[in-house]
Length: 319
Image (tube, rainbow, N blue to C red; front, side):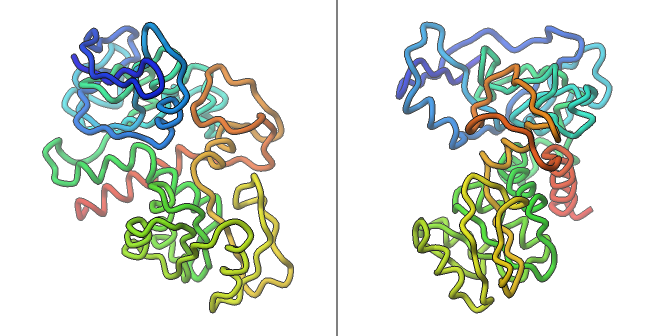
């Protein structure tokens, strides 16, 4: 089969590699129908040192189950499934705390020798705890849109959950990339009254407005705070650095409660931590940012990912 392999910064090749196959009884093999490139793939593309063996790329995909191990119970051959960026068994102590990215038997696709999803097929360990079955067929016209559920849509949705977005709230979404745009969609679905997108790319800003953004702030650094404060909602911002929405500081004189939905790295860092204690990672996550530390509160990516996937899949099929 063919797969994407990176050998060093800027050196990406499509090569013939051994076919994906069942190794453990809890594995599944998925024939990848749609995969995409993540912004985090740009990091090794710019900085990766030379590798004689190369690194298999990709961690966002959907596809059709081609084979299942003897102990797989929740899916069958022919099911259309979402392949998230990490695999987990769903049963360990961390999974029970909804911290699936810290699963003791888990890991990430496309790193530390794991095959990547930019390939014709992919072996998925811990299939029951990892794959999410979609209620549509492989020829559904929505397939390219459903691909967003493999990473960015779930992340944007999770950011809105962590930020406690609800009807009538004002929300600022920092960043107009794919996750930021999905954060706009999530904020609108949750009923936010005012959605401010902080970004500078004209095409992305146009999409943000289409998705529900009511205001645009393009200023950089501290100037964006005063720009937000000048909007009709009469908001007051206090800069939050290296913090997610739930622990950002707010001015006590704010006329409205402002929640900042920070994307990707900040959300991922919190999901990889267990409340009140830190745990050394058994894998090197491509999304790791800064030193590990104990989280103040538990945040859960996978349950919100699953709810988002279920809700969006139902709404897209009209069921």
